[in-house]
Length: 503
Image (tube, rainbow, N blue to C red):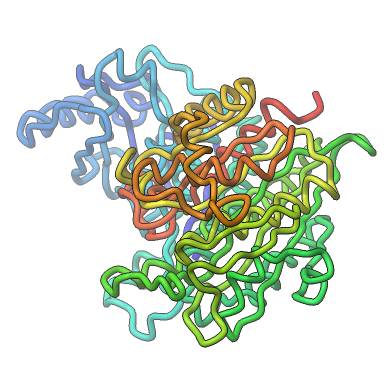
């Protein structure tokens, strides 16, 4: 759910004013336990002394992302005082604002709180407060729509209300609105990844993506007959073992100058991946409902861009299929023809995502003539072996695009690590019987998969993000406690904001 938190903004002078004494008061300290001027004014000298004594008793050292709570001292208009640590002076100069917002929201979950964004040596600006609010919103996300019985305390924690108090409160509302729309995009992506595959089959996924039309996004849905007309033999081969028909959804946001070439975001949307005839082991197969994390990120990013009326032209394209074993399934040793005309020898039907991407990329290159392509796909287990579950693998044919994506990742915390693309990886997918094989074997699996995709982008600047480790079942963070992370929405939004949006 996305509506579990309400966030407002106010002046620091409200630090000493609470709703009839109800709720929490949140203040921040470093490792020296010093309070900011507004916090000192709200607590008074006795309150400040109480914080110091409580910290000594609780062994609270003010370390970054630590907290201590205690009954509000006499004379303070609050029920409870929450003291959040910021760490050393060095820590404070590189504050991760979304993480701080998420951590703080976790400490006051289900409560009403005034949050005093003020501490010694800091002036918290509106932009930083917006990032704080973004983290708080993302931390509040839960996916429990299929639970018929709630835990006894669930109702008590269903609503959190925060008032962020800061000096630049007058302009903070605009930043807060930007945080809200961006969080909606991330939450949409999380919802899609978390949905079970019997609910989110290809037609339903396409229907939900088409709802972006309400925000002014132009929608085109390709059904199998049109795909056959276009020659999308690779995507259709993956889908032919399922009773659920595939879809391709093209989403166009035209917020830039008319006629200007768009940037293209392309997502793998395998709503369930059994592996097909090359069936996966049973253990962990339930996670394969999340094999559409790339497509979810593209839909979420288009939602965020359209919501804020981004001044750029963007095409989002997703190929949505289900990969199942059946008498009609494609087989190892089949040779299929992609939309580009290139032929593919199937070695393993579980290397299906690259086949889906091949045809969608070809269609976008021919129809949209984009200035750049970024594809996102939960493509290989090999990237998880290489990089774990905190960072995505990036492959690119363009140094400038790769640098821009890396910078966007650093800015948002959705980090990438550039991986090599060398001729040896491309040679590994050469086939004796067709133009290429759909897998180059076990070694260098993420790189040979990227080399396969590279054969379809022609001369367009391109980057492939292998998000298998970060899109689902990734490590918990201060801004995400969900199985589906919605990874990539913030990165793509920042990439557009910094490098493609009209100034």
